[in-house]
Length: 229
Image 1: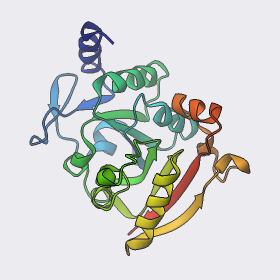
Image 2: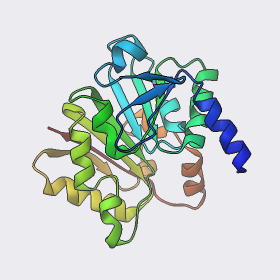
Image 3: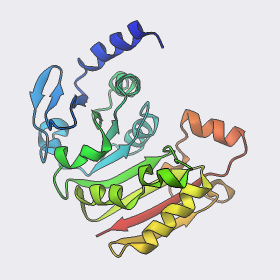
Image 4: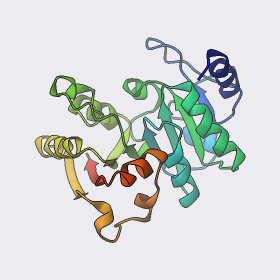
């Protein structure tokens, strides 16, 4: 992508009413349409204007899963989180074009979630095909590493649910081991090949562009669902 196209998308994403952006690690300020806003504890009232459950998709990329979930569940609110502005642009534009009032996007680092949500504000978290960081030396960068789970715990309601969908067998096994090692995590369901049988939930049938590629390569898609107290 050319620098000109990126700059154009950054400008467009800053004008979308379903996008909130943070531009500094040390700054908890968000902007929407160029206006500074404070959303911590206020997503339901100030953006969605209802009290429906709020679900996050972390490292959402182009927002395909967030959009698919928003279409399937109009009585729930979804926020796709990613740091890449060009990716957010695509998902936010599509959600806007589809008229999905229950889909929003947050451009920030996952490490900063606690700055933009209060404890109990989030009902569920989805992590769909994240970077698996296969080297053990980079295990702490995996989105299901213990220190990331502590961040999620700081915004989830007690008993909140997390979902991991991945084609990486090592990340699947690693996550199961992490869940087993933590007293505040409870494994609810796991499957090392979800498409080999009837899906346990319809939302697992949502397929992103990358998942379609994985399936074309005959990779197995795994899934883990676990709760956190």
